[in-house]
Image 1 (cartoon, helix red, strand yellow):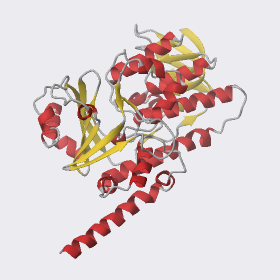
Image 2 (spheres, one colour):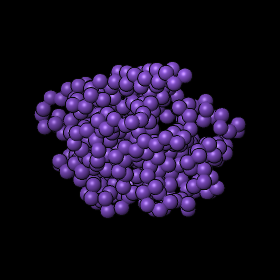
Image 3 (cartoon, rainbow, N blue to C red):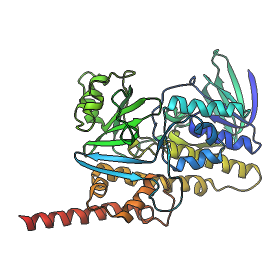
Image 4 (tube, rainbow, N blue to C red):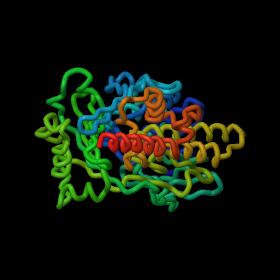
Length: 419
């Protein structure tokens, strides 16, 4: 069997894998990337948040992505019947990027993959990891190539950025149920033939159909728009009796007063794809000789577009810690990797949970707006969830539900007075 020897094997060529590979390569580490699919490929996760831009810049991938002229995302809009709440990333607590992109992931991921190939990184498409064994921190990974032949890849470290493929969690029995309630999504793309001129046509929007059910609208610079509905799995399954995803998504769109005219009779570019019970978690995020990044470890929910940002955050962090370790410095993976990532994941998990309880929606749509509160929430939505100067990060466990409680009490008192 053919053998290859590298410093780091990276499984998956999505954003997490490319950021890891590019960072390690520029620091003199011999890297190999194996990707099961052939690019370009269709992937969900088309809305980014500003924190991710820090990672693209540090990994020296920003320029190639910026040259693609993807739609700029300056904030996010939330709609509930006649109520509208718009977050502007330039009006947030603390420092950080004020914009990001809305991207067709097929083009976006392929741009990064081709860029790391240009840098001289060994990237193999249509190569599937079928087995792995560890001897201390060193590993031997069996890779099945596109022609069906097998080879051994010997590595000092493995970064699993395989996303929903979840290679190491499957092979090493690391999967564990998510703490989030089961939700599912159905999405597709359309030629946005009724797109309004100006800002309205470019805004990413979340249209709330019920407290736990919402429609996403993500316009791209190529004239297409991504449409998706998210809700409790039982609700999503009941949109169509025979699991007809086209019927289900059309039914969801028909319930949107804001978007029925724009998308009601527009044909879908492909049969809508269903993602059922998408939230994921793992028993551990690292082990001797490996680290799990992105969706291969934790995936929360698409509501605040955190997926790619957590993928690249964990990807570049794993790369930095391996580099540090390879230079002879002791790394405490429990605190420096798992602890750090869990801190950010826990903040975002709170916001996802409080979105679905309705408490966060209460804060979003409360009038009159409190600019200071809005700026602090905006920083969380931008992905700066490790900033302890922000009370909406530091006190995330209670601050949203407590403020929602006060607002609801005030409303009830006002209604009693008027009665």
